[in-house]
Length: 268
Image (cartoon, rainbow, N blue to C red; front, side, top):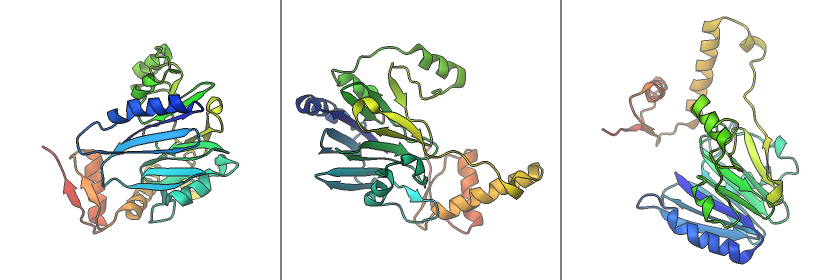
């Protein structure tokens, strides 16, 4: 949905040159518009559809951006950037509530630094690289190579993880010192060299009656939660991307049971 790149670099000239180099490469397809914002040592740019849901709160002393929609656990309206910054700029991000929806977001002030996160399942990719002077973040690590502080070095552990699990293992990528933010974690960096991941959400374990029962009971509980999640997110204007596979047919069936008839989009 959004291709973004960001840098925290105390060297203003180097920061500006990097952003000027990578910003024209952000639109991967025609029709995307490019935006950029800066605050203190941070410069951020992204390319997105003009209709993409993007929420921005920007003033000379702070900036918060949400790409996509982040929903409170029991709410039907997406958070504003101001609301999200109030949660993420707390002294202890571990107490931050979890948000539903598909999104990536960041909040930055020169005093407290950067806090960045994504949806609970980590489907929205967030990659990062940090060294003593620089922190790079992006939806892809490809553009990191244009910063002079970044050295492209192969990471054998990243390749082994992909071959063994058919995906990234423990956030390790094919490049040394480049990691993908793990699900349920926030990237916190008061300074570029202090970047670390902090767990703020984990899948809850069944308690009480949910932990009892046989397979059919567990299946019914799962169906109940799935039904609730779709009821909370679906609106009269929802669009169903129907591939015809198990996932999209299951969602279509639940929507039909809830007497909701969204527009369906398919290809081929």
